[in-house]
Amino acid sequence: MLVIQAQAMGMCFGVEEAISTAHSLNNPQEVTILGEIVHNTRVQQYLLALGFASQAEGARQELPSSPGVLVTAHGISEAYRSRLQGKVIVDTTCPLVTRLHKVARRYHDQGFRLVLVGKPGHVEVLGITEDFPDTVVLPSLESAPAGLGEKLAVLAQTTTPPDLFEAVYERVLELHPGAIVEKRDTVCRPTRQRQQAIGALLKRVQALVVVGGAHSNNTLRLCEQAEKLGLPSLRVEAPAELNSEWFRGLSLVGLSAGTSTPAEAISAVYRRLLEIGRSLRSPIPRGFTNKIFTSRAHS
Ligand code: SF4
Image (cartoon, rainbow, N blue to C red; front, top):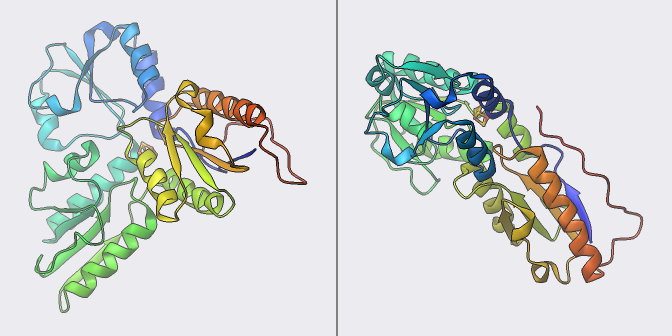
């Protein structure tokens, strides 16, 4: 079985920097992480072991009792930030999320209604909708309605697949003849690179394994992309979740990972896939060989 790795995958610089900032704090026991700094169970457990408290993403109505709070790379709204007055804020908002906030603010101030292509209720999306409550969040092409207004600005959650963003924009345009419909592509570069890499990978494989957490939006999107092409996909966080029977009969398997996934987790899954291939005696296509895993997480 040949395991082909995506050319770009794994943890993005925004999440890496957030973890690095958390790691550098010398008073973790005084800080509550608001939501998940990374959708990865092992990293979260490690941070809890350092002494951080954690507040579930669904519990944002309550304020943590700790003197300090850590804002994750997903960012928060200005409305939420004002509720945190009196707390020491460790802000690890990704600069590419900050860029989305600035674009949203600018369009809103110019009288545009925001149309955000993204996942309703996602923590990054809440960072926009809490400040601009009349924002319309569209998770799919089918969800785009008519009659949204005369001045619309179509933006993207940073992890939206670029082709979905373009398709939704075209649909909104079509449904609003005569309206001013502007578009600003706020998909982040790491997401774009990973999407391109997965597109190339899916042309070459029979099935896809994605390493990432169950709450990681971009991880689930990678699986969806495979399934749209009729390829089976499997999401795992750790090698122990891989069942060798799933791979029986496969000779070309792709490997990718969400932007929350550390390189070590990808490497461990890769090694387990090679073991499975050997145990099943699955043939490697002529002229190919499995390579030593190399992290391509940075971009
Ligand atoms: S996915 Fe993109 S926007 Fe989000 S933290 Fe990573 S680099 Fe930043």
